[in-house]
Length: 299
Image (tube, rainbow, N blue to C red; front, side, top):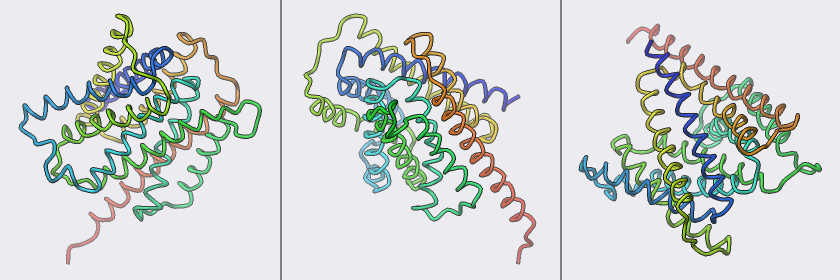
């Protein structure tokens, strides 16, 4: 029952993340993407800054200056800038499909930079997954949109963020890490605003409501993921993160009138299939290593 509750929670989290993406796409149609990033950052700073203050966790202590923490924080800023910019310029279904390649990029990075062992099966899955990405964005063909490369930028930045998180000091509270991640969005959003060549705009009432709902949806998604990972086994709940693509496709069709073409569906299937295979393979190897360690007699 705990795993079932965890699965339900992670599916609800994906619904909230999809809703957040929808609000951000609406907002970037009339507001600079950099302004949206800055406002998301300010909301997170207020929320997690208040939690850290209540918990009496220093947000700028020595642990916050650890190189891996700084790397994770900077990568978070770039991933958000790339992702919000992609939502503004690229069909939401394309964004959702390519972004599902993130776990493959993390596995690739872990093998190349952290020295983790990756066998030929997972290497093959990574290759198939990135072939799926190429099928979706179609570089060099008539349907290619250069803006789709922004999603790949987000994928790479998220991979760097998560790989750095694996090396962060265990004593660093997660609320402090979240505060730092949101705080970096303020300067990176301002930088994006400068690159866009647009000025800050006064928001209307409905834009302000959308901005608030976007932030609340994001906060709800993160909270539900946290609950899901605490009460359910990772092997049970993690595969259901891919439901985000399903919800994104539904939102794209019903809300934005975006009907994906056949290559997008085909590429999405390759990305999802390879991602799920990689995850299940990693879980199987982890269980095998655990069983072998238990079977080894103590000296």
